Image 1 (cartoon, helix red, strand yellow):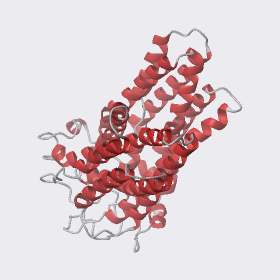
Image 2 (spheres, rainbow, N blue to C red; image 1 turned 180 degrees about the vertical axis):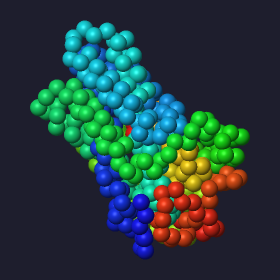
Image 3 (cartoon, one colour; image 1 turned 135 degrees about the vertical axis):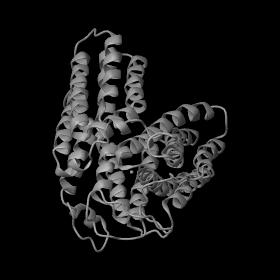
Length: 432
């Protein structure tokens, strides 16, 4: 699994043996996470006739999926993706099918729906963190890994845009439970193709001796402290980005603009994030990742604070798009730091902690901003949302003591899936 790479680029990333097949399989499985939320919500709403019940069931599904993510990732680190991911994916797919059947049957007890949804969420396979760990094994060259994480993050964002569109097409001609079944098929087929890829075999089980999570004083010294900066920034960016949804709705309501306006502004945020992610991946940075991360977090915060001063729709779109330019780079850099902060046997868990932080931040941001927007002027709410990301820029970055030092400034050949490089002072390096 080695190839000489003279000029790091997005094309070079995809030319690495087995990279295209593995990445495509992971995207098929991860598309399930883009389709399942809307399909399940519509199915529950039609089945129960209650938005409150549907919301509660979805909250249980989301909570078990998000907060048990590090534990599921630890199973992948301990047993390897082939032994851990497939049982998770098959159980998750089976429970989704049970939910689909339950939603089709009138009079299904609400408790049955809630318990089944909670169990399904608990089994969600961590395909995103595992794919990023595979990238890290395939690409010890940090410049190439930076590009891989960037294209991975942009592709994932596109999945969460195309997924609801796919469900929308399904419900136009069939019942939304078809979308739930499709989500089950996608995750089962995608995971099976992913774990049978030769590249996935590069992730070797860490063994029981390394099964504990990355915490201070456990495993490799300093891993917990080294993960503090990327996890906090990921959570803060999640808070700020989720706040934009509600703040844009409030902005449109204050000015009597239509709902279509909201969609355009949020599309501008996604477009800015995609452009920023690709641009960040293409730059050969001369500064270390831990120095760039505060810059990206501050950029998100300042642009959102400026968005609150927008006098009209045009300037709001511009400000939100500028904020988006920093979102994907911030998350991509957080994942890079998480990867280089831990030993190889902890990679999936490190990525899962960042994933959990983003999702938890998004949930918290929506709840808090929902309270603030009714009590404070809209510009102040934008400023508060931006201040969260800006404050995260102040979190210091630590390196673990006897860490795997990744040489980000160098551009060596990809000679082995498990190679480790010394880190220089000028370093460079993305579910529901």
